[in-house]
Length: 311
Image (cartoon, rainbow, N blue to C red; front, side, top):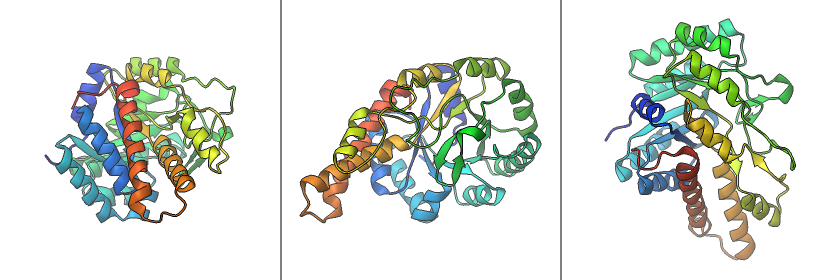
């Protein structure tokens, strides 16, 4: 089975009231852990690559790793560019075999966002590739995306219909309370999604797939594990998973997951070196890290996304 676009995935997800996980990948172990979990649960899968990950791992290496995941799992897998920041980057990924790209012009004015998104959409659609756009700005840090809390803004429901009609984008990332990166909520806070905004967006864009970025919700056990072995992380991290599940049962068809994987992997590696300081074989410490990623992805698929058995 070749790589697929997200078009059919999202139609099934919207009608079935679940979301598909879009998991960021950087190396072989991450790809393996994610794809093994999806195969075991027979779940559709989006593997996504940020600009930074593409620079780190090299486009060709990442393409071959994702192709291997398709061969090994037999699942419908889409390869997505996360937070493309220019037409040139999106074009390069489209020409290089990606089946989906995101153009993130959310930091620009409404008209500039529309113009750049439309440019990417026209090129992508001519090449059979789908496009995700963003309206509203999320706080936090992810690779080169860096937005302060003061500069973040919720998506305005009254703008979404005009934006989608004028750009022709295939899905839309909105800002309703999530934020990029892991370190975002202090202990004692009770972060909530603005599901009222999502509901209003859904009314204005019926049957249209919505995307949530910045949806980290890391189990406390990994925070404690990292801190036990020399880390200094805050307590509660992220939006409650119950909130994300509600969004997945509404118009949200894609939920991005990255920081959860990074922290699970890092926690296991820190623990391994603390318990086995004499070891130096990467296979020894990356094996439990890969297993932690697989366990995390299985949990997200079953308990948050609801896409198990939907491949």
